[in-house]
Image (cartoon, rainbow, N blue to C red):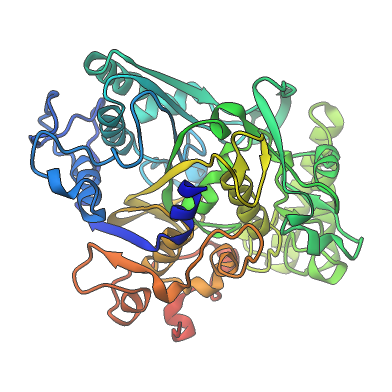
Amino acid sequence: MEDLAAILKDHVVAVVQERSKYCSTAPFDPSDSFPEYDGPTGKEDNPAYRAIREVFRTLGCDRDHFGTSFWNPLGFLIRPGDTVVLKPNWVCHRNHGERYGLTDTDSLITHGSVLRAVLDYVCLALDGKGTIIIGDAPIQDTDWKSLLRIAGVAEIIKSIKDRFPGVTIEVHDFRLEHAYVRGGRIVAKSRHEPTPDAFCEVDLGDKSLLVPLMQGGNYAFGVANYPRTRMVRAHSLERNLYLFPREVVEADVLINLPKVKTHMKAGITCALKNLVGINSMKDYLPHFRFGSPKNGGDEYPDGNRLWEFKWWLAHKEWERDSGVIKFLLWFAARATGLGLRMLYRYPREYGSVAGGGWYGNDTLWRTILDINRAFFYYDREKGKVEPNPIRSVRYLALADGIVSGHKESPLSPTPLKTGWVLAGLNPVAMDTVVAALLGFDFHKIPQVKEAYNIKELPLALFQPEDIQVVGLPGIITIKDIYTKKAFVPAEPSMGWKGHVEYVLWGGGI
């Protein structure tokens, strides 16, 4: 419980700002010489490596030895022989905005140069012995090999192994389901059932934040492109299950490496949202309630009958893994979308607000916070959620905002030059700072706002005004970010425009 107590109480977030550019050549060796580093240096400038090092210093890690060969910034977190999980944001191998000319991946995923720098300091703390697992559960049609190639993972691991041969490094795709896409549509799926030795269902029971939505009895949770069957089994008034790889929940340390981005379904994605990627099947994850508010849902805003019919067709298509009927349903939904644009002047991009992609989504924030609660309160001795776990995880969040993503993010981000790297022990504190730095009113980001109101299995034992920001000149509090205009205004996704921007609302915290 000591490790968890430290996480819940810690309200310090370190922020450093560097050049908004990545080193492009794997294995992303540092371009500077540092006393604690005995490896090769590269000719190409590596701002991310400098930023990672500086954010550790700013956070006060091993303060007494900084500037010497003995500096071990992650020694407070990692012990020799530990199993350490690194969880980057590897949502996909390609920017889905390709059809609009967006091919950038720097704003899409946690960059390989960030991963490399963190790995160096993790290996230093392991002192030559231990296990590192790098993994994520990207969206179902992600090409895993292409993703690893873009991130330079093979080159990074070779470089690390040459210097730390006693450390085992594994890279794992946490997904149990894959989709095959042709012509912009899912044509087939493959699914592997979880085995008890490799995966565990973690049950929040009636402590789930989804329970209030179920008490009326008229609910149907969903997630786009998945059938309802498993969702119905996973979530009820009595039990609320999330499916985690055992290697993640049984690890000694988790280092969360989110990407700073806006998010069409959650407002922003950072430390809290990134943990959703430890769930191995997406149909354990309620993203919305089917339908619009007028019929008890929050999947999309109210619309006309043709709008409702389009999504009825889509829902029928999601229920099928492959075949002619699936194609016909997909085609009919596309044709209906064309009709909406021609007859009712619906913008082409307006379809992105469906699937829960708008500010009225009252479901996904609950799932995001549930995932974090299930992970942090999982007792690694008893194998279940406990309010006072005997053995809890050690945790650090380190966010990659060297190049952030905005607009139709997270899958179609436009690069936003910010130059940030953030570090902290508490994900709620970090996400509050990130929301402010993007120029959003954090009160309008549900998973951030509501994280402070959780009474049972809480994630933060402090309030937003208690957060201490270190590393930005003249900035100490969240209020300072707003009043001193230390933010870089991001453009929210279409379904959130006009509802989260701090300057639009006139501020006030």
